[in-house]
Amino acid sequence: MARSRRDRGGAESVTEQVDGGLAELRPDRDRPRGWTLLIDGAPQSHVDLDDPAFLDFSYQRRLGHIVDLAGPPGTPLRVVHLGGGALTLARYVAATRPRSTQQVVEIDAPLVQLVRRHLPLDTGWRIRVRGGDARAGLAKVPDGWADLIIADVFGGARTPAHLTSAEFVAEVRRALRPGGHYAANLADGPPLRFLRGQIATVGTAFPELCLTADPAVLRGKRFGNAVLLASDAPLPVAELTRRAATDPQTGRVEHGRALRDFTGGATPVTDATAVASPAPPAKTFD
Image (cartoon, rainbow, N blue to C red; front, side, top):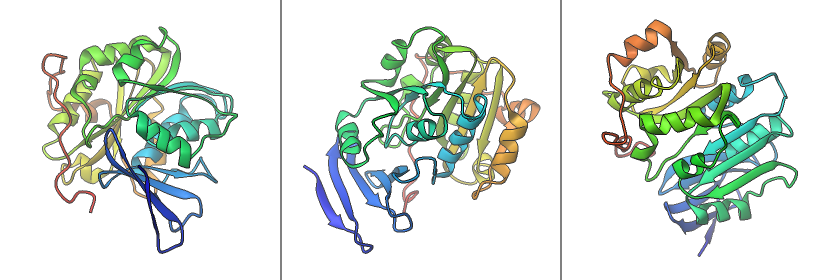
């Protein structure tokens, strides 16, 4: 059952138990129709119903840059989102690339219902939300269908192990068209063993890779998000670097020799050896 409490600004927070924990939709005091989705107190997504092209979280802005650079400006894309949350990136694609066709795979059906009730999608957007496991949903995507696949899947603030393996990445490659892009939101902290292993793993399927994140995360100074971008074609590294450098929270892009040095000889993981991403340290989201 959903519960509401009034924020000091007048809008009401909404809390509801979903499969992934206690979900809260918290009003944004600075944006009249802005909302943050939290699961068990951990921020997951931000949505502005008046401006779906606004991306508040740093990692979502980095994913937004990738959406912008995945094809000529404004042209429709075919996008698969593994993990839905508040559907922030699906809204962004629909707003910035009208007539795009999108598939969202989200395992938490009660969360989808909560988001649909309180943060409804525009009826003209071509967004189909499927329930179920992300890897099982990906298997239903036809060969070469997608221009862009975005993986942003967290259960209990951790990416499930079966979405981190070379076999999973091979499925991603199968579903992408030649020249398509794969973007994964990854979370790790010192000593960055998980992140380095993911770079090596994605490299088993894609020859072109780059990584963008807060410099402090890349230096192993703190826990945080990093976005890994992969393709079988050259990546827009120069423009991505420029955009990351001018973000409100400045990001850095690693590519080529620097990325290989960063990976440091890490080995790919398989279904037999994969583990979930590390849990955030206590008080990460306080």
